[in-house]
Amino acid sequence: MSVAAINLRKRFGSIVAIDGVDFSAEKGETIALVGPNGAGKTTLLKLMAGILRPDEGRVLVNGLDAVEAKARRNVGFMTPMDRGVYWRLTAMDNLIFFGTLYGLSIRDAKRRAGEVLELMGLEDRANHRVATFSTGMMRRLELARALMHDPDVLLLDEPTSGIDVDGRRKILNYIRKLRDRLVIMASHDPQEISLATRVLYFNKKIVDESGPLKIVRMLVKGRIRLSGDGIKVTKINGDEFILEMDINKFSDLMHEAPNYLEGDVLDVEVEVASEGRVMSRRWRQWE
Amino acid sequence: MGVMDRLYSFIVIRGFKVWISYRTQVALNLASWSLPVFIYYFIGIALGPGAASLRGSYVAFVTVGLAFQGYFSSSITTLAGRIRNEELIGTLEYDIAAPLNPISFMMYSSTWGLAINSINALMTLLIGLGLGVRYHVDWISWLLVMLLYLVSIIGLNLIAGATVLIVKQGNPVALFASVASNLLGGTVFPVTVLPKALTDISYAIPLTWALDGFRSSMLDAAAPVSLIKDLVSLALLSVIYLAVGVYLTYFAFSRIMREGSVQQY
Ligand SMILES: Nc1ncnc2c1ncn2[C@@H]1O[C@H](COP(=O)(O)OP(=O)(O)OP(=O)(O)O)[C@@H](O)[C@H]1O
Ligand SMILES: [Mg+2]
Image 1: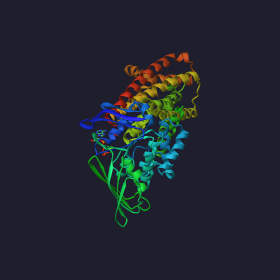
Image 2 (image 1 turned 90 degrees about the horizontal axis):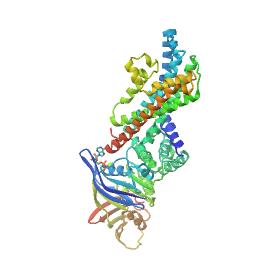
Image 3 (image 1 turned 90 degrees about the vertical axis):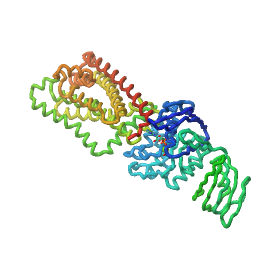
Image 4 (image 1 turned 120 degrees about the vertical axis):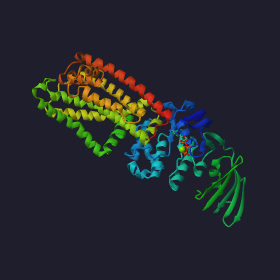
């Protein structure tokens, strides 16, 4: 399972949206596309989803051209658009409809819809019309739809924007567990980006790619366990500590760091260095 | 496999459940199906015995005409209207993201129009029965006419759906369908009373042949051999309509997927 873009170019009239993208990604990766508004992130995801045709170059999904119907079978796609579902139908009916489009039987679609609705915390509203949903609920439903056919490749456009803290944590936890898939998401959100095994800085083309990351400073307020290899802990005062450690992947930040943190961690501020670039991240709610 | 489930999805969920959620529209639909039968019934009475030369009775002539013209006129607006609407709303983008090719997607989409117009047809025929129409049906003939007619309707659906995706505003094909079914197709009067030029045009419309075939097979129990002219013409037009429809659909979808206008306002 893989996605590859070869010399991809796309323009809309005079606007160049994608200006020569070459890249490939494999099963097991979670890729974050990061870049300014209008950088072409959504456009790139649509090209990979096969709903937009490139002017030049091509996208291959599992070796098949993305525009072929067959290539789309294993792809789940969502954009943060609250009108991508049928407002007149219930959440359940929406999911069954889209499930059968992906080849599920009615019965399987119903069962799977139950699962993904539960995952998205929408089980109570399964039989309510989408028109009665809040923005965040709509977003959850769109994510649920992308997961209906349990795709190998997930193309997510700002997947948790507009979703509340608890919902976001649950959804990101789920995405994190999709280690046997390929997830590509466009994001402006530190928490989403922190799931990535690779970060692509994108502006019409891939400007930069995150190499191995290094945490230079991690300010922790709360109780911590003073153990672990390759970690340097400095107590500043009271419940404030500075942790220094090497990590290889952005995702390790989420995976490794919790090993050193326990109990009521109040606040975490992190500075991440990658090839000369220093970014700061701050999580108020550390899990 | 899969086909029945998708048909259920397209007809019951995306078709029926959305339709029924617009209460007023449902009421209007039901009224617009039944009223014309009564109107033409009274026109027939007003015209007196002269009109009765048509297939035994004018009511019978009109009932069969109205029952089956619905597929032609309104299934087009049903599909094209929905497709355009979904393009604006944004759901079309997700329909397209599914692993269905555009032709299958549009064909599945047209099933709801066919289903709802079958209800229309049945209702109209039953009202006709109540107004004294007596049916003498040759089922094989009827089935042949119906099958060929449906192929042409699917072709026309594809043409209409593709056209709204291309022109984006209004629906020129709906106008064509409306003129064709009300004026040229022989729904409420025989095409032979039209001026020669218009009669000739009417022969290029599948509805004309289909209605003739339906009337013969449902009112006179005509055997398939006696309908050979209707059937051959209908088959020929069906193939043409379908071919044009398939071509236009590919064209329309490749265009919206190039322009990225799938959800443009
Ligand atoms: N269908 C379209 N027609 C015309 N221009 C388009 C279309 N879709 C995108 N664009 C243009 O292409 C460029 C890239 O847009 P895109 O939506 O991919 O950016 P993005 O990186 O997703 O931005 P954001 O962070 O705001 O979501 C923008 O300049 C946008 O105006
Ligand atoms: Mg975007």
